[in-house]
Amino acid sequence: MHTANAYAAPSAAGDLVPTTIERRDVGPHDVLIEIRYAGICHSDIHTVRGDWGPQQYPLAPGHEIAGVVTDIGSEVTRHRIGDRVGVGCMVNSCRDCGNCRKGEEQYCLNGMTGTYGAVDRDGTITQGGYSSHVVVTEDFVVRIPDGLELDVAAPLLCAGITTYSPLRHWGAGPGKKVAVVGLGGLGHMAVKLASAMGADVTVLSQSLKKQEDGLRLGAGSYYATSDPATFETLAGTFDLIINTVSAPIDISSYLQLLTLDGALVNVGAPAEPLPVNVFSLILGRRSFAGSAIGGIRETQEMLDFCAEHQLGAEIEVIPAEKINDAYERVLASDVRYRFVIDASTLG
Image (cartoon, rainbow, N blue to C red):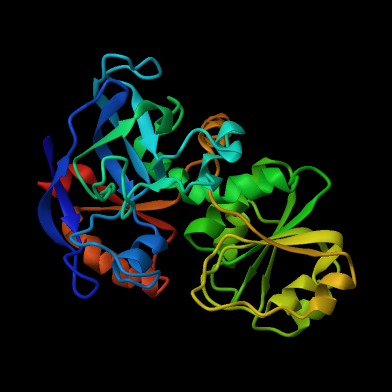
């Protein structure tokens, strides 16, 4: 077993604290990664605080991991010592179901293994990226291209792929009008990616306070959803709406902004149900859908796309001792646009 320095939640209440966690020995198909940077995702906060169900503690969160390979198993072929690599929201799946065989491991019919807070194949509870090292089977480790710095690449392993996957699936590109609801950790990447794909991008945010940022990141238009006139002006406009916010919104009002056959795709995950007026769907053959992360193949595709287009996350790098402050700032929407932990400060 390997011992790793980490920050972990001892319970659903209270701050994360410095601790040590155990990592398994490197097996024949495993890769040992020295973590350099780990992004802070809003879902980390939801999970460790028990918002999405009870957890086993202590729990080290983090599923936006960028680092360097320091050891490999005897049968590893995909990675070498010294490689720059990343790990996202999952570290295993059954590999055998129909979805896994299609390269859609995130939708494993037997349940993919989350990077933290999940039962691993050896029966232990997985621990995430707020740590100095991690051991992951080679098939769930992706290569970070040389064109991307590790700190700005880390959030791509969740915020990047979570928005890239639906943009690709629903055909964002030239001639398509795409709206992004919310300009936060997910939203700012959705704007960058959709713009790089050639779509006409609009940001829909509660206020205009981030308008300058939105336009700089690639949006052509920016509207405040607190203004009722926005919904009249933009009715029937968009081919695709990506909703990145994790708070309840009036879905039926947003559906009215879609063209014929348009789709509103949820990637934010509010705890509360989102009621829908069915006539908002029927009158326009519109779709209300959801999307998770991408599979490993698509995640690599996303990283290569970001390197080609020089796209990284907008980040604020923090030392480990600032993690709890960062959580409060995330909840207050006081970050532009992703906190990234410098893992060298873990001790």
